[in-house]
Image (cartoon, rainbow, N blue to C red; front, side, top):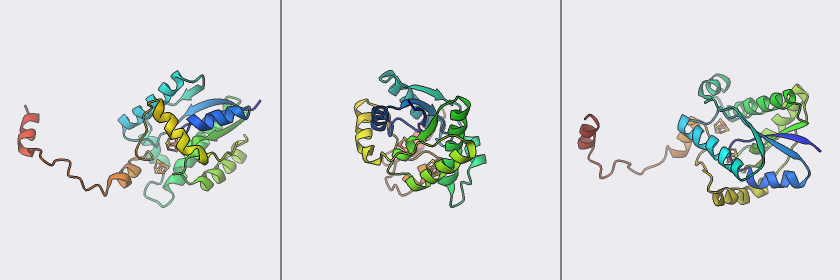
Length: 196
Ligand code: SF4
Ligand code: SF4
């Protein structure tokens, strides 16, 4: 039986592929390591969602619970064209090292199960890192289960985010929002209240 370490970025892409991996006979152990999730309260929400998922599933998970904004900013060229590649590399590399250290047979990532991510890049990078670290990369394409997985997460009432993770993706998601958040709000009066 393959003892697999599965990197998990949030509970959203996990639900349905986890069943598939088990049906294939793999023993799955999760790994939560995501310094790319910002800001802090968003990070905590996604972390909490994975803990809640665990309440209804026997999966064991190793957690890096430290907020990783500084690590992300130092490892990722966030102003360059390859921001997401750097971000994938950071997380896959750490997962591969953790898998090797803890004597798992192979590693994989829920990033591969999302329709929103650059699937081919993740595959290519997983294979490269596998060679560098010396541990097999268990490639899977479960993108067809994406909607099913999200609806399972919805049924379980797990938190589902509206942007990828980093502060830059949050900006890209909301920068064209035109709704005036302060409509009907008496700015002066509220400012005055907040000073009391
Ligand atoms: S790819 Fe996105 S939705 Fe899927 S598990 Fe990662 S953060 Fe969640
Ligand atoms: S958009 Fe997503 S994958 Fe790209 S750098 Fe931000 S968090 Fe990482």
